[in-house]
Amino acid sequence: MSLLTIGTLFSFPVAAQDSFLDISGLADFRLTHAFAGEEDFFNGGLGKTRYGASEDGSANTQLRLSEISVLAKADIAWGWKAFAHLKFDSEQDKPVDLVEAFVTYKPVPSSAWSFEYKAGLFFPHISRENISTAWTTPYTITPSAINAWVGEEIRALGLEARATYKTENHKVSLSGAIFGFNDPAGSLLAFRGWALHDAKVGAFSTVPLAPIPSIGTEDSFLRQAAYVNPIRELDNKPGFYAALDYSYGRNLQLGAFYYDNRGNPEAFNGEQYAWDTRFLNVYAEANLPSDIKFISQYMRGSTEMGVIAEGDRRYVDVDFKAAFALLSKTIGPFRLSARYDWFDNDDNSFIQVDNNFENGDAYTVAFSWRIDAKNQLLAEYLQVNSDRDNRVGLGVDTEQKNKLLQFSFRRRF
Image (tube, rainbow, N blue to C red; front, side, top):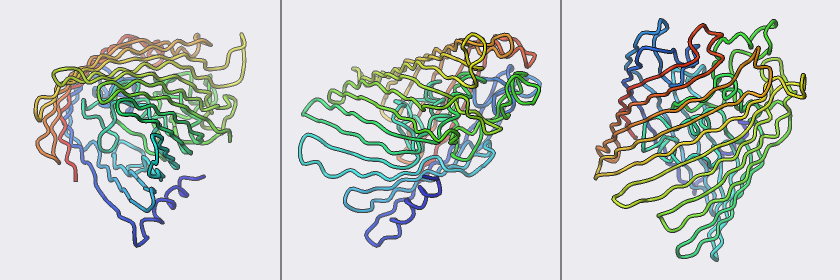
């Protein structure tokens, strides 16, 4: 099933007489100040934030349009709905791109059981932060390292089914999916490492890779192109995921999610490899007294690429893990949020020529003001401390401290 087919599935029902189409959107205007230090990964560095220092390492202050997202929702008939998300982002190599496009079917339940089905291009249900318009988070400007990676590399083009059992106080859901077009997932975690940013990669867009010596040319260790297109099918093998979610009223949510793209790590199309990537994500979320929200996620997985070589190891073999804890308090139209992130990568092969070891943590403090139903102001300070060995290939210290101050004005329309 191609992305063009998904677009056709969306557009056809909207033309029907009994359908209802709702168009909405989000514009995000941003004032950013990156303190002196490392250049960001969108501009050839290994920085950990979306906006980094200038090329010469000096502080960088910019007023910019971060994104314009247009969302289309259609109520078709008999439990069928359609959704599409288009985004303009000048940082992407394709400034206008598709983020999601899918149809859902949810028949009216006749018992404590309910069922829902989804087909198309969509984010798997992993993030506990990105729950607002256009896959943004209401708590901060920048999501955690875990959910930033989901936004850039994890997208399902497939079929999902969910069954839910609900009583007065308890709800249990079991879901699963078969998907394709996510074979390069893991490339960024290995070659660049974890990052904290709010850029959602479009279906046809690419993310640049820093010019580390181990990749990029015929003479390099790996003939990987200097970019990653995360939504790409390379080995014609479907992947799968499964999830279990539990909630007690509105006060407690727990869940686990397992992903395996079943990539053939030896598949290579001349530019990108398929990666064998799998991970487990677990979460806990609670509404505490005094209008305080607690959210935590933990992810642990592995990613491999290339043929088996010395020591029964592939060219790239990385174990990764990350976690965060967030507290958020609302006071009328105001919200104050604080988050701590921790992340780590362990490289199991060929570290003499391609060292992908990494560890670090991050601190985020954010304040938001919901002016009215359509307008919101946010301020955020983010500091990411990291030690990444392959920075040596760029001639910079392995230990870096990336600091970013942002002010965002979000306008819904």
